[in-house]
Image (cartoon, rainbow, N blue to C red):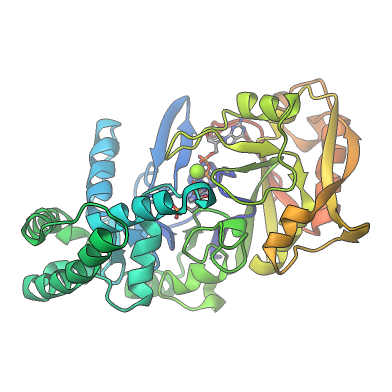
Length: 430
Ligand code: GDP
Ligand code: IMO
Ligand code: MG
């Protein structure tokens, strides 16, 4: 059975959660492979809304194995809160079906404090992070001092690591950032209490996946953030601290890349971004306001308004290359309903010459102007269409043009937030 990796092709919030939920029907296991609770993935099922931050978006479907891979940075308090929140919504997170990699690194309270203190220090030049401690936790992993889930099962080892980490981070917090420091005993006791709750979920997830593959079952890999937020391929330094592209679906899960059969890029019919950094097609006009209002473009994690703009084909072409996209899902097509004219950015212009591919130095984007192509809009709501043929001809022309400009076929079209408001043209699992 095929395995499908889902990635965002823009700056996140493309609608990955909705599509993961939809396609979980065809998978046996779903795994988050990077990021942390900076993600906010929204599902709407028959009008009922669920927002997931850490737990895979397959959790609402019964009897699916839901996993958190080694590539994720995990805040134990946030995970426990999410489990409780899901229980209130009637979704049980069962320790037979939900497992967290013993190799995943923990986000500790000092990581959150460092994240916030750094942003404060940067002032105007801030990244606009979610303030969840993501960056500092990944830094500790790379610095080889990170505390992993497996450490929670070894109290002595945990205490030694915590002591070392606190000595270093408290020094930085106090002397460099002029921020609050943390008491060893408080963190130790809080973490040990949470360790008791999380212990049943801790597992060798890579090995578990290997067994799932051995049984010929299907896996859905759920990416968070988007290609332009990738720490290497995005608009560095205005990015997150993890590798968000498809290659990391393997590395962040503990299996090899030959297991990935289909790379599915989730692409919004226009562009949004939360936080700072270049966004060539950003609109500060009535159209931008339309996209934000009709698309309800507010962050699912922080509630911040998202910056909105026209579709940027240079961005998605870049995503097609760095992810090796097999096909795309086009989401939020309905948000374009009623707009007189639509624009697509086909290239950038700098000093009179055109740039067709994403510049290797993203700071160049600040000096570029988008080159637009104009297409007619449509009046009939696309949500009324149940099949491709029912779409207004202008919407079909828009879709075909996006396929031509990006070189990637669109396999699914989403015309509303609900699971049912979706047209599957070609199922990536078939
Ligand atoms: P994710 O982070 O990629 O999972 O996306 P978010 O959940 O942060 O943001 C996408 C938002 O758009 C959510 O509120 C979804 O419920 C909503 N959404 C997803 N697909 C569609 C669609 O086709 N049309 C509309 N109008 N809303 C959608
Ligand atoms: P999902 O999975 C949109 C952005 C933040 C900030 C930058 C770095 O819902 O698509 P971080 O806290 O990760 O260090 O912040 O990345 N960001 C997201 N933007 N969607 C997300 O996740 C994001 N996760 C992080 O706004 O600009
Ligand atoms: Mg989101």
